[in-house]
Amino acid sequence: MIIILPNEQQKFSARLVQALEAAGIRPKQTDVWRVFNQRHAGPPVTIHAVRKWLTGESIPAQDKLQTLADWLSVNPNWLRFGESSMADDIDALRPEERRYVANLRCLSDEERQRLTALAQVMAQFAKKRES
Image (cartoon, rainbow, N blue to C red):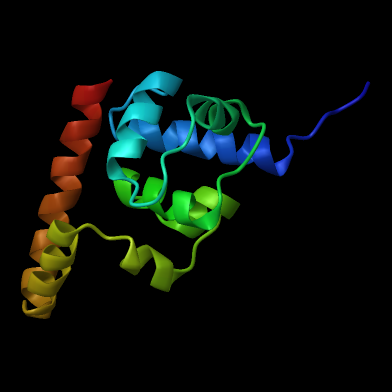
């Protein structure tokens, strides 16, 4: 039996599709191509380039990777390599998440514990609702 491991381009493609779906975006090349070019400050990419990203044939250059990460609210290191550090995760927070963390830091230990318990209960209900 031969086991074929995915290459870096295929792993990138899987993470890109995962990020697109998590953001509620269909991983369809025309949709990604159109919106990406609206958001990217540099020269537009071709639909062929986007197809290659989605099919695991290539990985975009760093400037394009950063545009994708910003658009999809993911860490660029995770998108490219599948890894991130704690500092990278904090940098990847959306503005409303950063405000939440800042507000959380203003609370006493007891208030933080209560809020954490409430958030856990709400997350459990949300998971049940999804299934």
